[in-house]
Image (cartoon, rainbow, N blue to C red; front, side, top):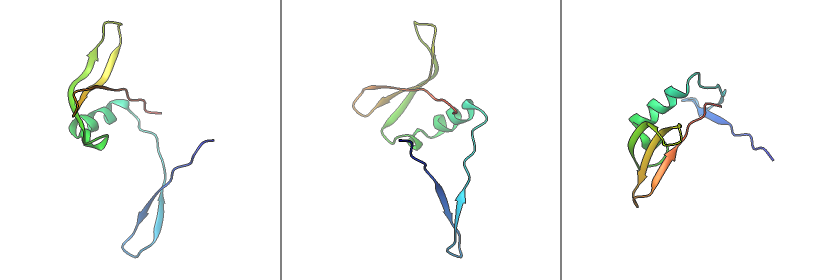
Length: 79
């Protein structure tokens, strides 16, 4: 069952206005925002690499460590 998530803005006049969802035009934009402030995703992460090449001819968008030293791979998809 798919859930529909809606975001609302509360105005100074105490009125609710739904914020219409739009798709990001570039995955790279999201990656850049997270690189600047990874706490958007989790306050527990430290970025140790961006666009990291793997031994399997792949690329990891963001490679992170959490506070316990666990490796966390962040793979972004714009859809």
